[in-house]
Length: 97
Image (cartoon, rainbow, N blue to C red; front, side, top):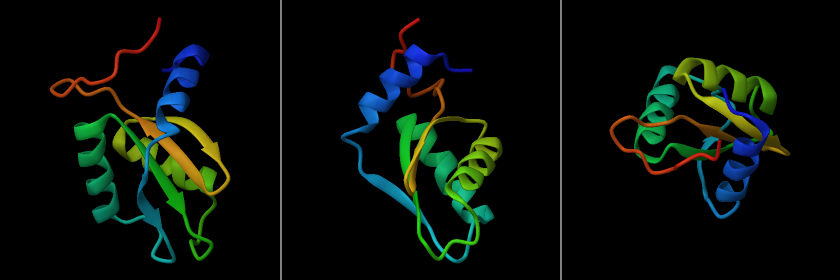
């Protein structure tokens, strides 16, 4: 579980990140979950976007994907959200206490 200082740190880091996944009218499926899981393992911190055609809200998508990938929702803002999951094998981010 992230504390407020860690969330702030991750939000700042994600500012410069590109959105690597978009969720559209197809919604969330197993393939997307698998790709997000792999991206979290490789990067730890990723940014996703919900298109207007998606059948669910940004918050719903963030929570559903976070639960499926055992990651934390760092922030939901507009049509985008940020996920974080610490990687055991590929540690890149050191969180503040």
